[in-house]
Image (cartoon, rainbow, N blue to C red; front, side):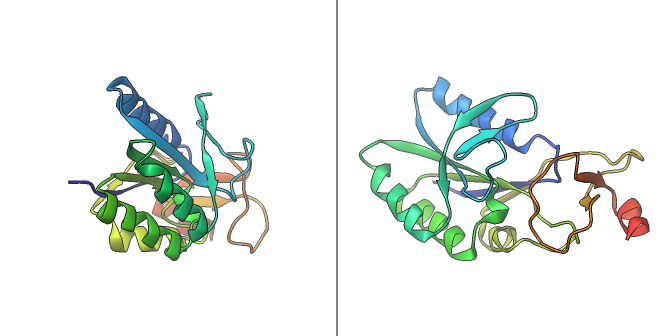
Length: 183
């Protein structure tokens, strides 16, 4: 029976690498997969899932429910047996609902990877909906500079916008204690 999975963590914890590794496991077993990513994330080019270790793969960029309708039409003819979604925090609750409907109506597992919270420690809309709907929620762990478990992405530049694309040049992963101290 297929499930909706949400695998989340702070930045630099290996989410994209884990996604690509799991996708490769399906490929080794001759199972067809589909890679999706939030169209908003263009740091490595449009429609690219890339890990900081240099592993990458082409993906379909999605931004709204219409994109998921296109995916639904491709599932049966392409014999898709699993769907992998990167940067799922940037997706709307409606897109998450549409992904959940793929699991329920097509019996295809959907693996969503993303951040849980933004630089303020508040849930992203896509992540909130995934926490509400996912059959399985797993945290991929990372550590703070102090050695404790990292829970937050502290933004190192001034901006009040929720989304500022960047990496370790803009964000630092921190434990709660360090995050609260830096506020």
